[in-house]
Length: 390
Image 1 (cartoon, rainbow, N blue to C red):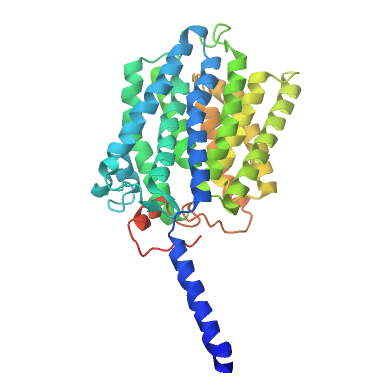
Image 2 (image 1 turned 120 degrees about the horizontal axis):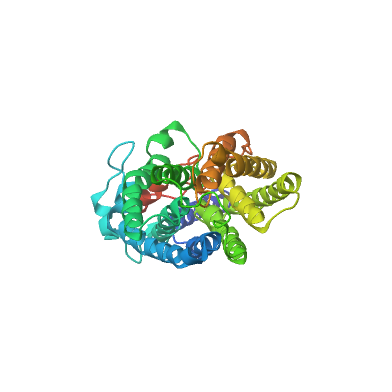
């Protein structure tokens, strides 16, 4: 009996605990799944109706409907593109440092009800990433709003998505070039915002200025639309950033906190700048400051501490304000809705500062560039022996 109590029972309990731990490692987690389902809806809301309202309020009244239709059309086209071959190019383990490829991922034929990606269904993970490819080209639309044909917009955004977005996704999150460099992009500062901002800048310079620019006729026609759209973007951004932790975890909670702090700091700094320079803060300025802070914290949401998030939000607000009010006029280009000034500049600020304001704690989300690639989730979900280490 003494032998049983001393040696046999502890060994039995250890074996039982170990087997249960391994059995549960690759099992579906209802908490993680619930959060990722919620995050997916939040990010989709950022585009429809968030971005549509934000951009719709900034343009002239005659162009509101075209902005809404462009956002809706891009949501449909990008969803089909992602399913058909986008996921295979972005997350595929084959290819090279710039493009991925996995023929088995075409049309998502490998996904069933039971296919897991870590602790969540792969169907949820793929849909979550689908919302990113939807909003990215929709952001660019603001750079050449009011002066590009609908058919030309669709052609441009499809070509950009194939030749720029998918390679950037693979390089940053799919184990490609940036991943090997050790770059950090927690939720899309490089893949989404810098990428879209630079594309918007090139497009608006290539197209030339709007008729009457600059002039009093080109002012926002509906400021309440702008504020409602910005509010929806702010709320949806918690899904964008905290959802990029791929589960309900401490990493997600920290990303939510840093997102809120950076946005708050950016709003306050933008208001102060307008108060000093223009003698009073404006509604459009407050909304723009919020978006600048949200953009800047995106790449660093999982690595910046609270102090770092506050600094990133404040610095991005200052530099984005200067880009919108000074840089654009100094170089004489017509970035209609300040896509480069906010998304491009804000994304660059966040990407540069995310290492400088690192909290010192390693994120364990298993997909951001501190921990591993997002494509790893796809590869590991195919392997029944893989154990999630989160």
